[in-house]
Image (cartoon, rainbow, N blue to C red; front, top):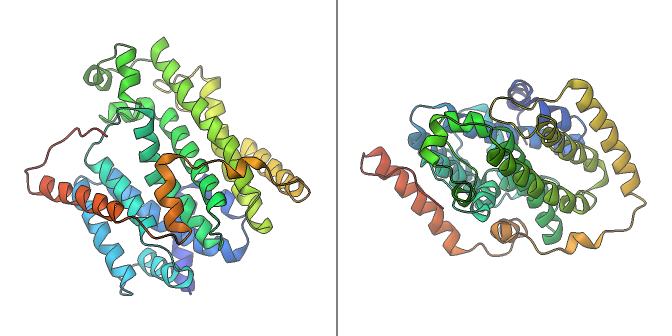
Length: 340
């Protein structure tokens, strides 16, 4: 069980660090909301340490140690760590899921770039779908079809984030757009990071990314309706709020270089109202055959892990490989600008 003071700390961290999730979490039943707040607080802390720290590789390696201690039942003496250890114990959380998140953060620290849309989806699977799969575990949902749709939602949300932040990321030297898209448009990545411009080609890439996100948002809906009824409104709200960010990018003419898409409180409240209606309607709606769609190739390992299928040994080795690469970087012998 999560200690009340640790839970209060986690909720406060989410209230100030992720308004969208905090708003959606208030719609979840307490049996899911409390561990979800603890989960997101730990994930948020991990993401912030890697994003904002000056020693990104070291931050990822420290997070690996924190996970090791948490899974050993000896969490670091910090609210997020104690709360996450309680989640591990109370929900039998598969280690492969937070390991996937750690791998995605390691890709960020190693400055990976992605040759194709599949590579971008693989990254999104780790930093977003892994969290969605962990949320399913908190809801006691282990059905592979429902998990596959939760992973669709995670990838869609991350693609939306990427589409919104193209300019901000470029100015930090980061590129998450597929490199083959840039090559097709004749855009040199180095020049792009030096002086990103919202030209027609760039806007077209943002449009393509959002189109892929929309496809996955639609696929995810049947999975939301397979969750426990009391949990559906909160997840519907998250789905609608994130899709709303994409709509704002469209209204900005797909210019996410000079403008940043923002949504208002009144818009969020409107989507929360829609989520309640969607939940009510889902109770009387037959199960959609879309729920049985094959999972994205990039998320199969998450579905297998969360559904208690035997984790792939190659996945464990992949995580160890990228962490070894980061250790080499810390020692001053690593490379930068990896491509996947």
